Image 1 (cartoon, rainbow, N blue to C red):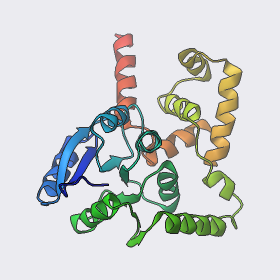
Image 2 (spheres, helix red, strand yellow; image 1 turned 180 degrees about the vertical axis):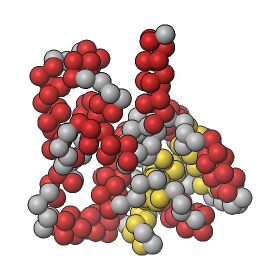
Image 3 (tube, helix red, strand yellow; image 1 turned 120 degrees about the vertical axis):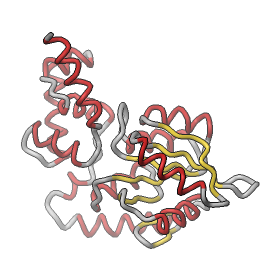
Length: 242
């Protein structure tokens, strides 16, 4: 994936400037790594990836406008030879599966040490997947995923665990988390209230939760919805009240 000059061209997608700056400094200490772009939102990440075409993208999950998994799916569907490393504050096997299915080639929590992340960047730039401390080829990671899926299939809710939300369902989940009612969601998206209810039922089933509040909490916990967007909604409501 890397260019002929041997440099690995990296883009950092992170909406917290302090973390982004620290990560950039760490990476630029390496002779074979160059940070060529930075993005603060999921949509900006997609736009810059298409323009800059980096070798490796370090992608946060919790991003404004479009979360990191959505951005990863969009980027990997549009570009070849771009490796995405997903980083998140919420780390578990289910999130790992979602990341890999979105097109990521490695997945780490935000407390990852440079001594682990930098070698992973080099492996991903060569076209390999990194799962835990194991480096795999594409066929190997496909077999690993299938094996893990079969293991998880022994549990009653396995089909739900691996059912990704559609882009429309993610839109609705984001509005639910912001406190929108079904009527407000219907007006915002230009769809009927019955359609909203249908999507709502699918979201609850896929997330294996009982109500919209639990769905919102789960979305926030996993970083699928950005807290900054919720604060923006609260600010708008305060202004309308004054």
